[in-house]
Image (cartoon, rainbow, N blue to C red; front, side, top):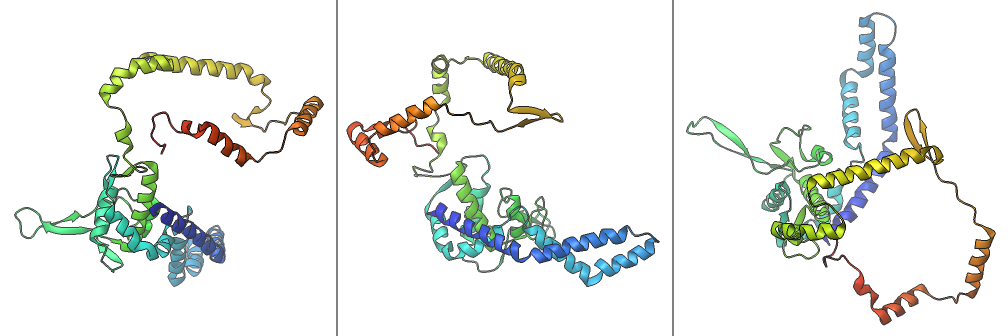
Length: 331
C-alpha cells in the first residue's frame, strides 16, 4: 500500500511538471532571446564603456534581477525534477503514511543509517505545522559559558541531489542547513523509503516480502565448508588466482574469436575509430518452410491457451517447480 501510494503520487508529479514546462515555454524562449542579445551586444564594435552601457540597459537593474529569478526557476526543474510536486499529491495520504512509518520497524541493510535517523526525526516532528523546522540545537562548548556550538539533529547525507534544492535553503549540499522545509522533507523520506525497500537497502523487521536479505545468506563457516563442493559442481577454480586466470583466458579467447570473425561480420563497422552496429537484415523464409507451416496450421485443432494451461496444471501441478532453488522469493 505504501509503495503504491508513492508511485501514484510520483506519476501525477511527473505529469504536473510536463504541464508546467508547456506553460512556461514562452518564458524559456525569452531567456534564450536575452542570452542571444547579451552576446550580440558584447561582440559589438566600439569602446568598452559603450558596450557596458548597452548591457546595463539590457540586463541591468530590476530587469536583470528578474532574469536571474527566472533562470533559477527554470534550473529548478532541469533533469526532470518533479520532486516539488510530490507534496501536493502526498498530503492527502500524509497521516496514513506516517502511521505506517510508526507501526513498522524499518532497518537499514547498509552502513548508512541516515534514512533510519530521518524517519525518527520525521516522527518526532509530525505534529509541527510550520513550513520550516530546525535541524540543529545549540549547547555550551566546554566550561566556557560564552562559547556555544551547533549540533545537527539529523543526518542529511542520504538526501538525493534533486531533492536538496527543495529541502534546504542552501543550494550547496556540503553546507549543513540550519533548517529544512518540512513538507518537502517528509515527501523525500516517503520517496526514499519506497526506493530503498525496492532495492533491498531498507528492510522491515517481521516482513516476508521486505525482509533482511542478509539473513538468507549462508554463514562464513558454511561457505568455507561447501566451497570446494560448489566449485566442483559449477566447474570453477577454488582459488582466487586460478579463478582470475580462467576468466582472463576465456576473455582472451573470446577477443581473438571476435577479431578473427570481424572481416566477415556485416553487422559491425568501424567509423572514425568507433564501432557501429547495424540492424541485421531479415532472412527470407523458404517456400518449403511456408508450406510446412501452412500444413501444420491446417492440421492443428484450435484450442484456448488458458484452457490448456489450466488443464495441464490440474493434471500435472507443474507450477510447483516455479521459483528459485533456494526456496526464497526473488527480490
